[in-house]
Structures are given as C-alpha cells and as structure tokens.
Amino acid sequence: MVCISYGVRKQSHFKLILSKPNHIKIYGHRGARGDLPENTLRSFKYLFENNISAYETDIVLSKDLVPIINHDFRLNPALTKDSEGDWIKSDDIKIYNLTYEQLSKFTIGSINKKSKYGRKFYNQKSLPEQEIPKLSDLLELSSRNILDGLLINLEIKSTPIEDNLTPKPDIMAKLIINEVNKFKLRDNVIYSSFDWRILREIKTLDPKIPRAYLTSKKRGKIYDKSPWLDLMPVYDKNNLGLPKLVKKLGGNAWHPRHKDIKRQDVRISHDEGLPVNVWTVNEENDMMRMIDYGVDGIMTDYPLRLKELCERKNIRWF
Image (cartoon, rainbow, N blue to C red; front, side, top):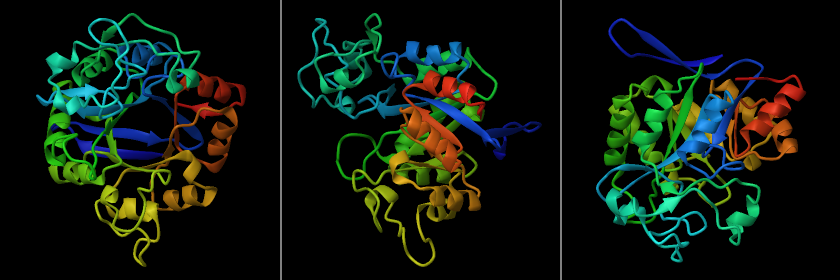
C-alpha cells in the first residue's frame, strides 16, 4: 500500500491512499464523459451515486483569477453554446481573456453530434444547459458527498510554450491550493500537471502536498531539458528515465499515457516507490492489459465499464 502522510492539524495525521496491493483505483476522467457531458457537476455526481470515489478534472483560470473547470485553454465549439443557445463557431475564445461573469454567459451540458468530438461520444446523454462550473462549485459538491477513499486529482492546465493563456505558475498554484483549503479537502487532493513548473511551485509552497507528474510522448513533450519537464534532463546517467526523475523531484505518483508504457516501466516505477496511474483507458482489452501490467490506477471516460469489468473478472477495485 502506498500512502502519503502529512500533519493536517496539531493533533491529527492523515494518510492519502494512492494504491492498495492487488487493487485497481478507478478514476472517472473529466467526470464520466463517456456517459455524461464532461466536467459538468452532474457528471461528477453520477460518480458518487455509483460509488466511484476518485475523479480527475482540469483547472484553468479566468481573467479575474477564478479557477474554472475546463479541459482546454479555449472554449470547445463542440461543447459550448453562446447566450443565444447556438453552438459557438470560434475555436479561439481564450478563457484567460474573459472574466467569470463573461464566461457565465456561455453554457455547456450537451454535445454537438456533428462534430468530431460528438461522433466519438455519440452515446453521451445530454443535460439541461448550465454554466461552466467553478472549482468552488465542484469542491462544494465533493464536500457534501464524501465517500470512503475520496480522491480528487486536480490537473492544473498550464503551458510553458504559449504566452497569455494562464497566469504564472506560482500564482496558479497558490490560488488553487487556497481554494481547496477553503473546503477542507486538502486531505483528499493530489495535484497533477504536464507543466512541471506548476509542480515545482507546489513543492515550494509545501513539499508535503501530494503531486503527480503527467507525461505524454504523443505530443513530443518528453526530451532532455524539455520546457514541459521544467528543463530537467531525462535520460542522463543519474536519472535513467521518467520514473527515476519523478522520484528525484519528490513526486508521489507518475501519470503516463497508457499507450506509452510497457510492463517494465511499471516495475521500475514501483521499485522507486511510485504508484502508476494511467490515462485515458476506455476499451476493455486496454483495461485488462494495464491491470496485467500492475498499474495502480486507471483513468477512464467509462468508470462504470471498468467497475463492471473488475467485478466480472473478480478484480478488486477501490
């Protein structure tokens, strides 16, 4: 079992359980976007109703520094309608250019079935139109639905290669951590990011705050001294690959893209004492392959599909 322990109050001590021997942790990815519109409050409530105690979601900031639940730096035309109820046409409406009051004029809750995204998730159910949620809305919902083993993975969206999409990493880290602390959910949260500068800032604020290091080979983010990896050398004689580098940086988990890893990568990570949580795994054969590799957690758009697979195959999950 891999736990993260830190003092919360003078007379208390907390353990965040990231892994259990011979168990799989099921994470609803962006809520449960295979079944319901992504990053909506209803999608997260759906997880709680089905006893899925872990979820992953994405945080960006508005112009007035309000943490917003949204996967992209820009509003997605396949998911977003304007104040007239029409699908937005522009794919370059930057969230960081708009105040939350301006963002609240847009609505989400359904999917444009004619879009590439809509064709991918054609079975997704529609919801009544609703505002783009703030992080505080989701944290309030979570605080009212505390499940045994509740684990919230907050992915902080930031980029080192494009200007004017987010505040500086130190500002983002402080704002988001403070928001979590307002709802007394520090005990239930692990922070992740592809932009490792964010994770460095969190470590500077408090090295005991759990951090997970996201990686993806698909978009060319992984190479020696990549800006995404905070200019760190990946393959020098001292690091010898990503799990060792994550461990060297004090990380608490490694979150690789599932198509990027092999069984030996999981073994190396476990040798370093690092849980491996993979994303985004939607097909049963891929789920079984990851379970066979020995990963600790699986992030999926279809958490009930994974839950049913585990129960059918007598695989323990939490």
